[in-house]
Image (cartoon, rainbow, N blue to C red; front, top):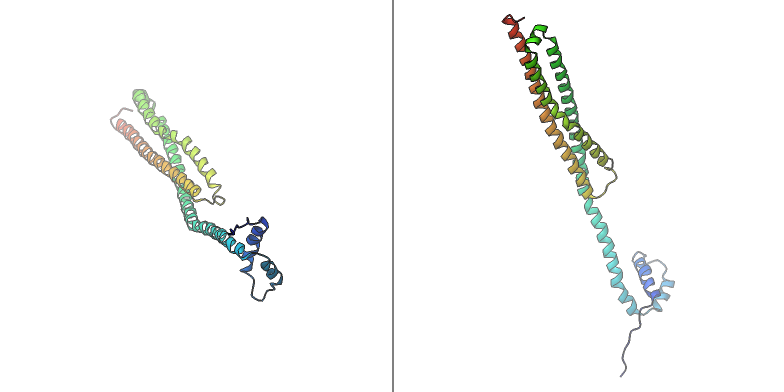
Length: 222
């Protein structure tokens, strides 16, 4: 009895199968194959057959990787669009915040001017009460300015993230940037709400001061 024992595949044969066989698929029938035919004649057909599945698996893996990369493109483009839209909305909210802060500062200055414009007699009689009320109103209004440093910090963080908009290619990074922009916009929206309330209160306080001065004048206190 004779047993059949297969010898290990030489490395040179594996190298030939990996680098030469795929190229044959792209050769036209008219291409010269004299040297190739000579190589094939010196190779065991079983070795060629055994190497084909390995080559096919490599081709499939490469194709899958390319397909996976292309499949992420629509998602990344969608996130880039949403990020750009959110950044535009954020800039508009920042502008609104700056305008409200300016209005509030002007209103506080006007309140001080109105108080100083009162006559000496009025200020002497009502100095303690009115000054205390005015300071309380101003302190409450200026409490909202405590948000300014936090807003500026978040603004710098957001701008730092936005610098990489055209470079980042992973959807997870895009989602992180988008979340950061939306968080800052929500913070600014809350600040704007507080500033609007403070502005309304300062307007009301200013009107009360003017009305009080007119009433005292009408009753002959001046």
